[in-house]
Image (cartoon, rainbow, N blue to C red; front, side, top):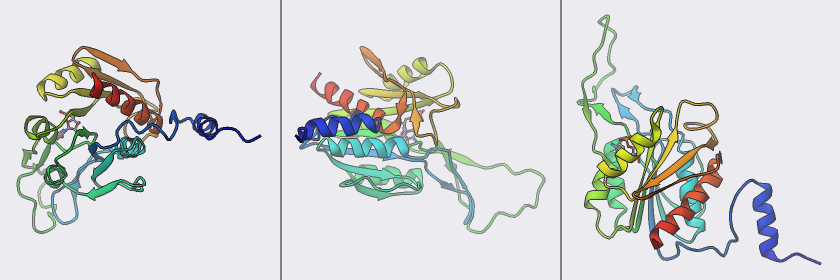
Length: 240
Ligand code: C5P
């Protein structure tokens, strides 16, 4: 006799290592979620840029997970080589300035999840022509980029939950809690980078989420499953 559809889905989810609960879990139905993902590239001249090692995998998995929970999702993506999750509206950007603009253009929204590794500094004046190697050393004149996450938390109206990420190499809990307060976030997700099998470029991750009066360490594993776990926590915090 054929098993019940829910049982088939649960068994498939278990065999793929996903915690995906039955398709019927549409806890985010009716909500609009904006997710930023990937690195930003800050152009130095027409052929060179300052970038970072973010792959975008975590943010794309989060967008996919939120969509499967019924949300309307806008994914603002830096330069990455990833397929757009089904049903997600994707806006491609390159620089921190463009990401800033695209994120605010995507509002109003109910939830913002800043998973992008936004450059902290950008060249004051990108060179119009290719920079020549004329001197023995070269100093770059860089200026701070806008902190998109802080501005969202401070300015965007109607948001029910603002979630940030912290990629740290040391004192993970301390720095993460510091950012939770400084950036006025509802939730911050910290992951330790620079260790084997986690963080940038990997399909695996190890994460702990912190909020004002609590924390949760997720079982390390596939970013796709961790995205589902994070969305479950977000649903809980929305109701808290
Ligand atoms: O301060 P730090 O860069 O470690 O904070 C990381 C968090 O802030 C991430 O959620 C990232 O997306 C966000 N961020 C941002 N704009 C910046 C720098 C970081 O939105 N210019």
